Length: 267
DNA sequence: ATGGTGGACGATCCA
Image (cartoon, rainbow, N blue to C red; front, side):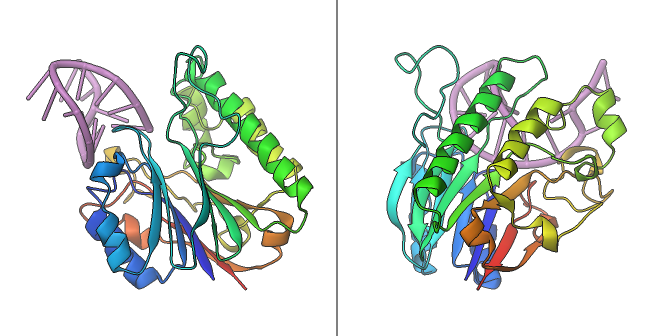
């Protein structure tokens, strides 16, 4: 079984590329982020005509997550319990479309689009950190309740956990950039400390291995990227991993997303 | 002057 995660940066703008990629990648499950669409604009037919069931959570032109599966798609959840809302309270704001879960071929899959902190001192930064903490607490609880649970937390974490996960750590620090700060890295590390494993890194070791390249400044041809997309697995799922890769080819050419798919193979 | 790119929306926000 092959599972994958991919921030597509608009499912409508990327529909043809996503279709072609599904056909050549042969994945069983694809967790998608940044669909940037409401349900009424989602390309349901494209997935179904290629043999995939698909569940989508999209409220407006921002965010949006989906799971496509050809090995079943059950018990769909939109938002995780306690998912923080940006600003004020649940009474005055709605949770953003950043998390969708489903059980596919015996694996509990979550497609996650972690909030962008925007800037070190922006109010979106504490929102991001709280969002990750609640997710980690929830996910740890699911595994504690069922230690054999095959759980995959997949998506765009908007964090580069190690210095080697960005093309020049000194440049990032000089910019006072997000994604590499200590609190963000601690929020990521908390998943590992809770027993989750990074499923792709052992098979895609760096340095110089990335999942995202900014559209500007010729970042892709200059090999100046960031590793910010991950599949984290519960212990039972991690024990099944036989390989992983980052499909850097998909970042090439006109009309590419700025993120590449990350694929994990299970026995 | 500098987001120099790209997407959605609608004349601006987001990444």
